[in-house]
Length: 515
Image (cartoon, rainbow, N blue to C red; front, top):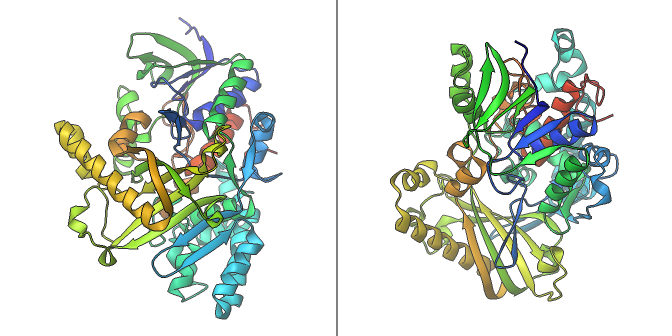
């Protein structure tokens, strides 16, 4: 008997990848259903309000200059009509006890800043940036999201740099251009956005980050990143798409070897022509698809995937006098050497301190950047610390040590507040809150609370990430776990790639961005 399909596509998870994919498909007259386990959609791209204060999970977005790769997606989905995108003056600021280095959010100005700081490295810096620009514009943006065998055979000739640097870390890539440790450190400032330092992170991913933020523009969304989610939801509903919240999918329904629908924990079932998972990779295959007969080789691959780090995220609403230098910035990276502080490292539990440093990734916005609030002296500080010690946090989750868990959270809030007061002129703390790996595990439904799904190691980048098409017939993946990977930008591009495949390549003809 022929399966009745209620929908053209059922999307599990209303994160940024799932919503964007749903919006593109709905625009192209596909009947779309999106199921979200939480009472609020958006995943990591959300703005929460606590006691009237906005808590933004994300810091900044790249790729929104006119004609840039993410801007094309926004224009296609008419998001630029409803959202006020604020272009930031600086992508990053690096700050420690010894120095402060400002990275202008313009590629040429950024190069000039580096050359001014490292005049003896001027020629090397020019060579490095020429190479990164070529890799970005002529290789990555021109490559295929899922090349067939014939296309793949052309890679050594058409995309030789992608082949050449495929398994290089950013540190080894930089070694080809400079021996200056300090210069390499300055070039790697944005590594917390990828979750790995320059010694571990993929060279190609760091090049994507640098080009995305400096060449394609660094932006904040007026009113918080939740405005982006609101606009996507409105667009989906306007195009007859359906979103159901508080609906956690328990399993993917199979018919023979084919995915034909989903069953929710509340007992409801829905059927569709294709099923799309915006859920954590490990959970997709170990939980949702556990009844499918996947090969031992594929099971081993899933087991051996390296998950990204989790994080601690502290929110502070403060009355303060903030130096304008630290405003209009994507992130301020504060590096604290443990030996120079008054606290011994063994007293700081929950963060991996093997490097001997404590790294804060901080964004600062006036409250009026979120609302029409008139008081210009109140600021929202969004402070992220990573990598975390997953085993430490899992011990609370498994043993239900509620009192100890609450105490550790308060200890971290006190520590972060103390550090922020030492860096900025804070007069009064009005509000404080914290997200831990347990928070991310619950909210994002992710393995060990990982915030980026798969880690940005060189062997898990670009074509070595999960494929959008899975071994299960009619089951597809969307999100930063697939090509090209990592962050909000990666999730957007994944959504474009998958939608393009479903729509017979009418959007991009199999390439990286919308035509």
